[in-house]
Image (tube, rainbow, N blue to C red):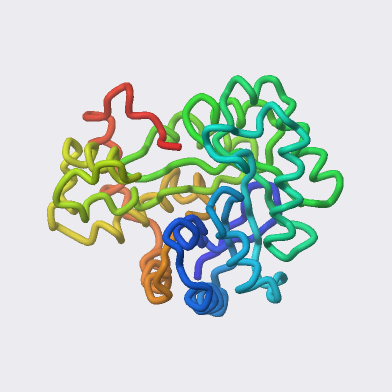
Length: 301
């Protein structure tokens, strides 16, 4: 397994991290989560990323590997404890209570990273939500604080200088961040965590996956027409290695991939271990994006 320094945090993270959304939303049985996470940790993965709004993901992770807390870096997110339609941004008390609840669910006294989850630019600029995370850090509830999101809000999160990390969308079908946020994050020493690095495997759908996260990426791939998506190569390998190769491997330190199948994580780890894509292939993928992408092709939160 390849490891990289996560910005100035000092954390040496595996380039492939486990994303906890699917085990919650897809109601994966606890026994399967136990097998999946313990096998991943045994194989060298040391990043687990989840959120309070991923149904019971935090509880499942706590039960599965809470007794192995020293073996991995634990990241979670806050802001939607009552659901996406009623975010916690106007209530510092609710936001802090959500962080406390996450610690209990994850069976730990402290996490390595708490991230504001898709907070709007408006509320970021007000600053109160950031202050809550800073207080949580000062109280020892988290070692570092971050922002998880895209577009102009992500740009502001980097510019304001108050976050240790940025989690943002980076994939062959989602390249806005490559110019908008990643170079500045690299310059400032902010750690970068890539979400959706394989674009939700949108190429697997023969028809538009209406209502799925993959739908927008599926639409984009129809226009991008990458040859490897059409059968000239392994899309999963190229997609993952593309994300890990952005800015010559310095723009992204770890890529979060979710799965419900223990064997799939090891397959992804094998792909990641192949290293950076050749410069010629990177140029072709990025060149195609610049030629085709519309002005409304923003990062998908």
